[in-house]
Length: 425
Image 1 (cartoon, rainbow, N blue to C red):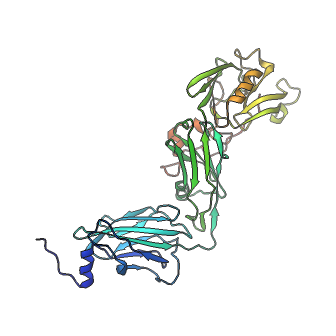
Image 2: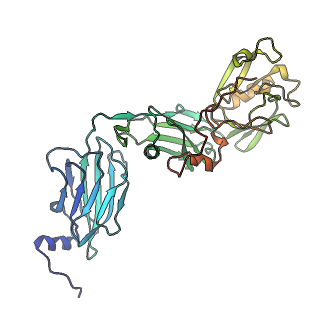
Image 3: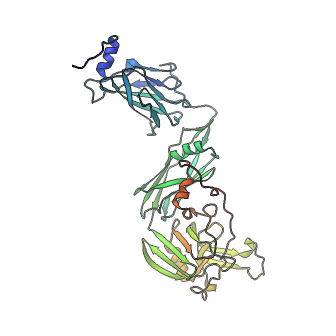
């Protein structure tokens, strides 16, 4: 027969018989309510309500201080905590650490302000009998607090497989620990699921992309769980509108500046090859992967807007049709009827990819925002990662992850705004 120590009193005997542990929930203020819940694994219902106490006043109507950590303590040396889960009414879990001996659990992530939490504590006594306690409390609203608002982009709609998700903040966040709080709360989920990460472009802007391109016909849902969470002194998360993106076919246009050919691939199959001209010496087209930013049926392109004097050998003033924009500084894929004789044979443009009007119209009608235009074998530089459109895909996955606050560091030199090149044709 197993030897059982004599109880120290009626209360102690009842504690071991029911498999309970005395718990203290430390919140820095009183709670607004508590309740108990039976454990279906126990031989008898587990009710430790009379052995739960709280720091601060109890039952006086005060709310817990969201700036204080959440702590659960086992006061009975004969029992231990085996598990704690805490989450608010919005479904946000509170991260925490449990001591190796089960004597104490404390939160490691901040609580939200003005939120209702449910805490479920599992215990066992010296004989291994399980117990469970469920507590609820609400947090107060701190005074003199600024709210960090988040705006997701682009607008809801259907995009190509290269479209990054963006997050714009209304205030700068520079501290690495604060950035980590923000980043953990920005959720991107896709169907089918992919591996992806946020990258801090600067103190107020983040981009999210998968390791590889989005799967064709995926659905991407973006949301924030930042509202109410403490980010820093007098700074908490604000509300954010969720965003849903639909992904279309996998469309990639590859321009080979050496062979003067553009090949369009749709879902892995080459569907059209087009003779083109790219940038001539001194105006070379950028290499690398670019994302379609917009489509404009008509654009007037003038050399004077980019510092080329009117009347010089390089000056131009042209009406351009079926223009697909790939950089904010003015690089397009567009109709260039004036250079048809060179298309497929020589590079004579000021940096854009030019083709005949019929092919430009077909290209214009085929691609959408978020589709990919890749240039290879040009003498030009590689497109900038940021500041001139979406050059995100020109960073390999290791360098991309280095721009996350949830990794060990930030890739150097990637958070400066890129110097823009002039509009070219």
